[in-house]
Image 1 (spheres, rainbow, N blue to C red):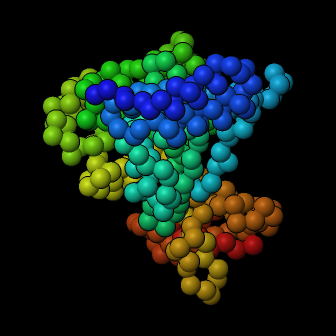
Image 2: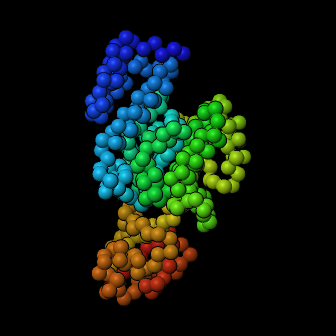
Image 3: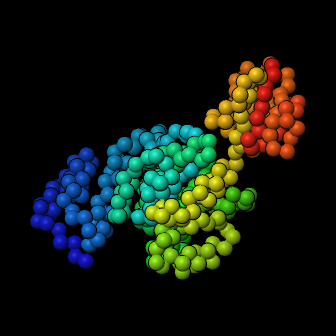
Length: 329
């Protein structure tokens, strides 16, 4: 389909070639983007303009060499864990954010709608998990701050598009771009490392648009390629298929437990649990409630599955998910 760009576009484009000032270039590129007709024939032009705008903005915000790359794009962790969403252009990452959270990111049917980190909170039962949307990763471009964001995340969620002609190739491109940054995306129970990798991050692969007419064949090809090397969950952000399984899987991959604090003589508050890493002890729980409790701690009583209700336990007792703890100091 032809682009059919209006004459005004080419007049504004002349101004772009006449300036070397980044702020002016950004302004002109944004003007060009507003002029471009929004249809399939201009998708590539729109993507190129958005990529250039994003790159210039990153470069203009970049601090001197003494500053850490990507610092301006750091997202402060919130909730029970942080999950970074990555993927090629137009895979539906923003649509997933929208249906999984109460946020309203910009969702469009053309690439590069997301040009910066976009955090939002996903509710899982009685806790909140932070999801962070990111700009697309392409064979030609990777935002300089995305690898830094991935390194600090708890889990990486790679979103692929089952309406894409070759989801396997899309997966390979992402993996290779991150290997170049010495980041290896692994299955959660793996402990070995590639010699070239400095950072390992747990990966969950999401095959979105499972409602597409050609999705069965492409999903089969993707499963065969991944085999058992990575966890794969097919979903449809549009129809809502697979989203409960996705949420449960992320909770398991965060490797956390929920523990409830019970004040003697009062009811248990189930809406506001403490989240601790698996393997945490009663003493860890006491420190989470208040830093001074670990020094004053005498004993605790515990309620939970497969336990004597209200039994007395010591500070080194290993907690399980949804245990109720009554601390005595």
